[in-house]
Image (cartoon, rainbow, N blue to C red; front, side, top):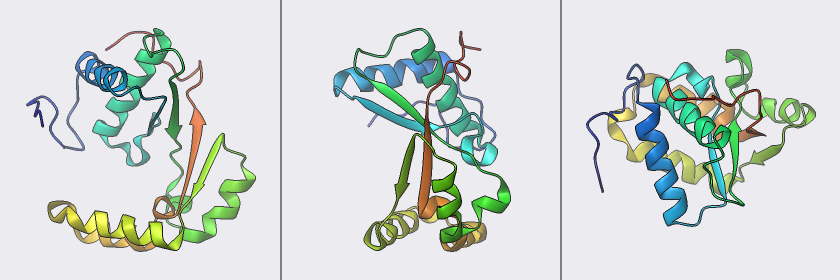
Length: 155
């Protein structure tokens, strides 16, 4: 596994769009990926790393560098109230007619919970609240990467 010093997990770290775009494109091409899912411009929680992924994929899409047949969708950031509605947000999400709606089964929820606990360094007090109440643990809505969201050049 390659480690890049400029890509540290940090909610405040700014990642270079050109570097991240290059890594994404290489991975997509090498693995014949047809669908890329990432965060939207809000990064779910304004996390700079998440936003950098969106910017990089937007750049690749806008400059038509993604391979033929490869599509991109972005996970919708919802407001703080909806974010912590848990299962109660599912009908709201369905009614808002996303391009893609994913609802986890009970088994998938348990797997996601187990995966979260594997990252002990990430398990701060608020992550336990996230696991219990976040709609993202149960329901995720995606939009196709639209022309309005695309970034024309790296920053």
